[in-house]
Length: 626
Image (cartoon, helix red, strand yellow):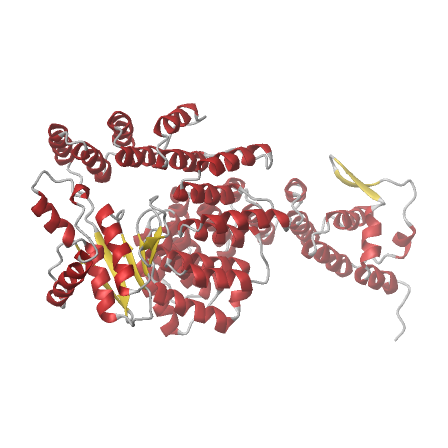
């Protein structure tokens, strides 16, 4: 059938991008919206149809493709033909302007509507939420209520998204009451929105109650619940929830698996991480660069930096997120040269480093005591890339200076900072004072830490250890007395190792493990062999005021040594031994691990609170900087 003279221009306009673009040359925008800039109406208008459905199709195409000028041209045509009073048309125009990022025009359309439907309110609220104007979304919902407009599940779920972004707990509870009163809690969108807000605001018990009440759950619901556990640092619970997802047969999405990978990275659960990796390969989500970045981060935090680098090399797109994850991984594992080389390659391929990149590369300098390089990067950030150093960059620089003994210079940098020093900065200075026995600055840093973190027992212990290292036993007594008076509990050191899908944890002087007698016997055999190489317990690392033989007994049964022996007993001779620790590895254990790697021929990887230590053939990757 031959096209009529009315439909032919529309088909041409709709299918030919150049025709759509040419419309924009005929219009401009003033404070009242779109207007024609030519005195004469363009020739295509005379044959342009007046059927609203065709105009709606063009506006929807402009919204999808983010074509604001072309959308304005259509709007202008609608104005000329007096079609603006149509509510559906106004809704489509509002949506088009919001999708194109022109929220002021969208709101102007909304305010000038002679009659608003529920879709009008939902569209405008959703527009504000999607464009990061959550407070305006909440205010508009209040206005909606004052005008007595009926609301739907989509209204509530849209406002809940705004609450989540604003951490608006009070408004969320009000919406919860609204939903309960209107019998909307069974709606999957409302329920998911509620639990997401509660989880993001740290009210996990409320989130769990909403989750358990829901009769129907989507993949987004499960994803929000897993992410809620991760955000609240309940990583094991997140992994248990992931297992429930697998059992129930819910379709996986990339957000669930990304959250699971984050949980695995946090607790170094490599086995579960490998399982999540398998799910990604099976579902095809591995091509997503955010997911790929999460995988690189997970493997590096689980001690498998080579696997992380292999994934990085095979990634299709090398974007800034993926590069930052890899640079951070290299830094964490003491491979500073690789981190700096990748930093240079990033710029060679046209990617500009951001604040996160500089945190990682400065951290790499700190781990290897590269003061000159650290200062170079700190200056480069400001002068070449026009980035303002934030508190994390200053923390890294304090660490770089302090680790190399430039403690006075580190203190001067803290004094010159444009903002107040954080607990991390003072903690870094205090740790450096411990290494270099600077009691005076240690007391200054400790006092500030006591103010910022009154419930952190580790600061009291570290100051006490500095006094003990300098044999100031009276001050040690006072420091420990103050710790006792504050009633904060010192975190006990523990180490853990994964053997055949099971995690085995050890405390110093462990007695509860079912093979503990065999472990102690094997440990004595190893120490006896080490003595042939001249090993002796470095008792100066034990800071109790007791005799050396007692100190030696305390050091002998540190948790990481017990974990290592159990790994030697259970793991194949070709497998590396990976040990995780919740505190900083002590100097004696560091020497022990180096010698153990030499006499056993095994690679030993220890992750403490600061970094990864790779022990091979009697050497450590940290270069004695940790």
